[in-house]
Image (cartoon, rainbow, N blue to C red; front, top):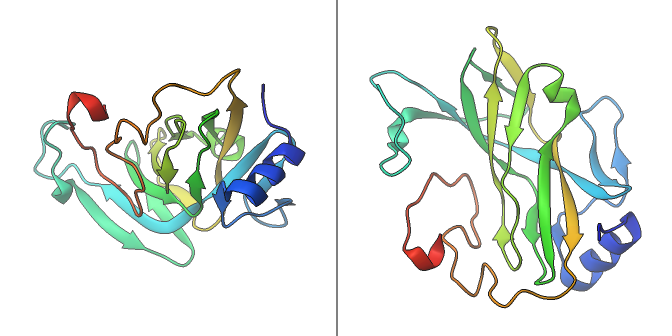
Length: 190
């Protein structure tokens, strides 16, 4: 079952599911964000890690070098180089209830410009700021606007609570704040 706008508001009030929470759609002269009919359009914060392929021949998720990124903090926007990507984070902090799993998708405004946003599902009992991967698939530089909408989260309520949640298995990205690079953990945390 997908949560409606009314149910999302109830869960936010009861469980602080989203902080900060905007209880309506904001769209005047910005990429929209806030509550929608059956989801929540979250914002990208003003911190970015721009990928630089200088001195690198391969990207290795088991041995990722933080030096592969240039850190940028901006009040306005970030420019993604052609055919490259940035890591960013949500402005919002999420607390996912035990009976909820989410699906996350990028905003169509960006997709129509060749900018793809990848966000993995938020598992039951996961909490934190989500790390976002934003790809520029075009041969031109692309602009991402800080503190504006970047993606939508859809909340799916399960028919029953899970036996083992993300928190129970001590997931490696639990309570993350900021942009978190790839981690390799034990079998319990993957």
